[in-house]
Image 1 (cartoon, rainbow, N blue to C red):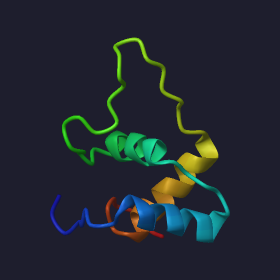
Image 2 (spheres, rainbow, N blue to C red; image 1 turned 90 degrees about the vertical axis):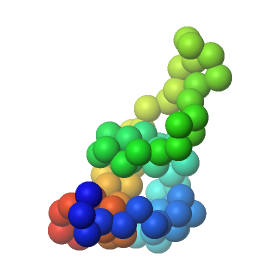
Image 3 (cartoon, rainbow, N blue to C red; image 1 turned 30 degrees about the vertical axis):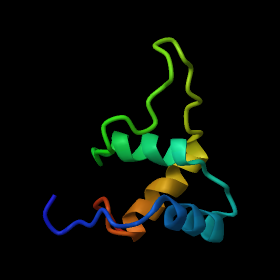
Length: 80
């Protein structure tokens, strides 16, 4: 991914989302959206503890806010 940074922390992303939308997002939701956009996490990061564990899925309004934060931090393409 030439020209893109992977330097924003989960805390920075959470703060940006809270400041701009008032929504609180979890690290799990951020990890799901980063994975969806091809931003690779550490090997065992946010893996379920068992094979049949159910993970909550990120609601659409929070996904939109996280995507906006990822664009702001230039982690994915698109205008802010």
